[in-house]
Length: 300
Ligand SMILES: NC(=O)c1ccc[n+]([C@@H]2O[C@H](COP(=O)([O-])OP(=O)(O)OC[C@H]3O[C@@H](n4cnc5c(N)ncnc54)[C@H](OP(=O)(O)O)[C@@H]3O)[C@@H](O)[C@H]2O)c1
Image (cartoon, rainbow, N blue to C red; front, top):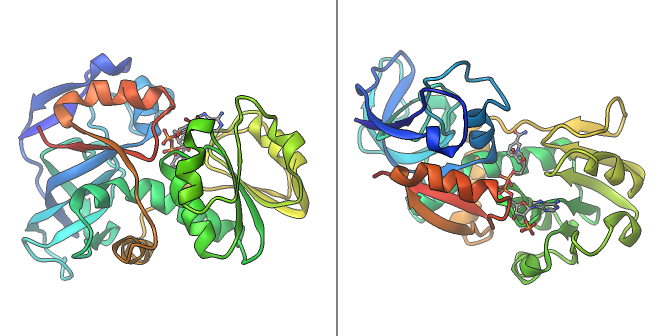
């Protein structure tokens, strides 16, 4: 089968399509014929060696997947061959691949009304956004500030926050403001022209998807019992208001999210769809930091 692999850490050009044996299943796993995967910024960081939790190359990148079950190992009772699923894996064999192995309990059935490209755009971004708001215990009527609101995590966080009844403020370039207003954001700050710390205050929850000095600056706009949730390292160290979110696989969360998207209550914006044969180019696009919503990859 074909997979995207890399022999060394480095720039996008280290990504190459190779022929490798189809993976074999271990207990509790399923084999999925990939319909689609999506690019997350962490893929680029792993490729370059800026984060190292996959170990040394060669490895195959990719966390998100949708597709049809091709084989089921012993111990899996909830899925059968042919079932369409979506979900998240954290393995060295990744999802940039024709066939993917995954633990069955990290997957959810793909709702009938959800197309497989949209389903593949969801797992990491949506689970991170969803679990961040859970961690923040965001309540109706509260004010939430979402940084990088137009990105994969951000545009879903905006919509999940609206569903919780929050007042949503986002940071994004002006070109993304109409897009975000359509998704429910009430206030938008163009961070290229306006310092958000001078523009807003009394924020109950700041969701930081930028990191660095956005941390200490976000603390300055919080209300006295505000919470600062970050998906990245920032300059905030020990602080009672600080919490780090790590998007983790969760079938129950995927089921709820899938239903919201199927019902049209949440929209997934796909910036563009590319082929896995264009993985290097897709990484270049992701690394511009300008992707609106998600970048989806489909097999060769
Ligand atoms: N901890 C975790 O489990 C976890 C999970 C998912 C993601 N993350 C991290 O969270 C970050 C966001 O992920 P993502 O998937 O949403 O990324 P993404 O889709 O690549 O984000 C792209 C967006 O970032 C916006 N942006 C760039 N610089 C900005 C700035 N200074 N202020 C405001 N917006 C800015 C851009 O909007 P404009 O064009 O409007 O600038 C663009 O739409 C990444 O660093 C990622 O690694 C962590």
